[in-house]
Length: 130
Image (cartoon, rainbow, N blue to C red; front, side, top):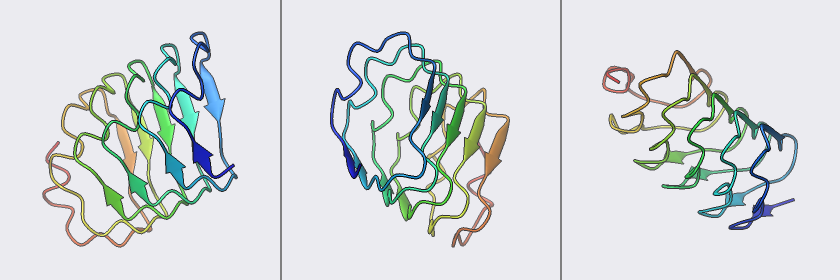
């Protein structure tokens, strides 16, 4: 599995847990998770994702836990996490992130835990002013 197309999970409105770890996912199209209104846990660990695109996670309004460990993420676009108002746990450790815009995590008011270890980030000072 290399690509998750837009509307791949269409009509799975009751799904609460989606485990996609240990695949070879490189790209997730905008709108792939659009109908997953009740999704609380999404695990994308150990894939080959290199960019977290704006609106890639759009529609996951009550998601509680997002795991993106051990991918090849170099860039997180601003507004990638927009609308994830219930997100409490975010793990993007062991990636290739160099620079994170200070507005990347804006609006994640429920966020309690974020793991950024084993990345190539240069400056955490501006990042942590959520």
